[in-house]
Image (cartoon, rainbow, N blue to C red; front, side):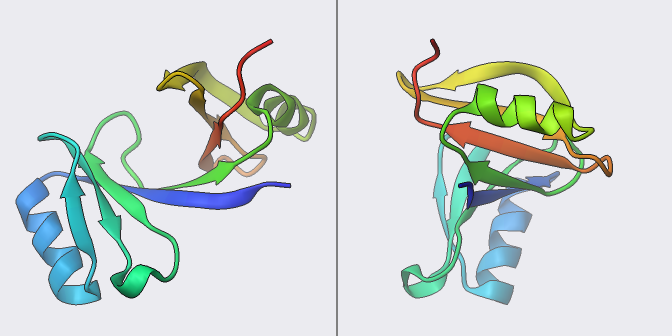
Length: 116
């Protein structure tokens, strides 16, 4: 069963976006360098996300944690979806990939499984 992991918001001006999400929604910001960082819900409630410099995906994205990316991609493709690019490592055991759903929306998948 998948669960919502986080959301991703592309930005053009990182300091301006940080200020916006702090002032409007009360999110704290923790940088991961100059181009990306996390925005965290006040008081640790709800789902956290990230801000990142706008790149390939020009719109916000929802990322889901799954048991094994390959299995979920196979189900998505069988249901009319499409894998976008290769599965990417994120540390030693974590991985991610984007896919297009049956309606053309882009979502992210994340797992902590080693590839077979």
